[in-house]
Figure 1 (tube, rainbow, N blue to C red):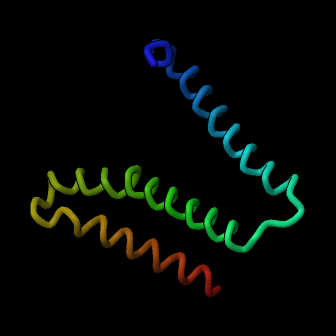
Figure 2 (figure 1 turned 90 degrees about the vertical axis):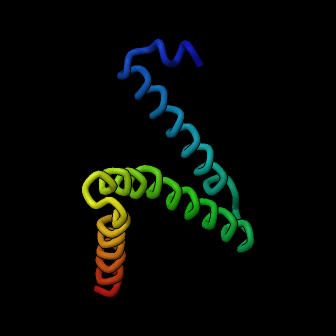
Length: 98
């Protein structure tokens, strides 16, 4: 791991991007080279993908928003992120209906 930290930020970003691409390509190969997949397998992979996206949205968006709001709102630090989360959910619901 020391060799990775010693690299420049550009090289680190390139390595991380290539790793992400490689995993995405590996997942796509399952679909491209398989004639049929069971509904149970598709449900499991969809659930896994949803879990990854929920975790990513929390750790990348909601947790930092709560930390930033703590300085300004103290005990009500959860209110601004909650409002943003609900407005985002409402936007997605309206966009889906349209």
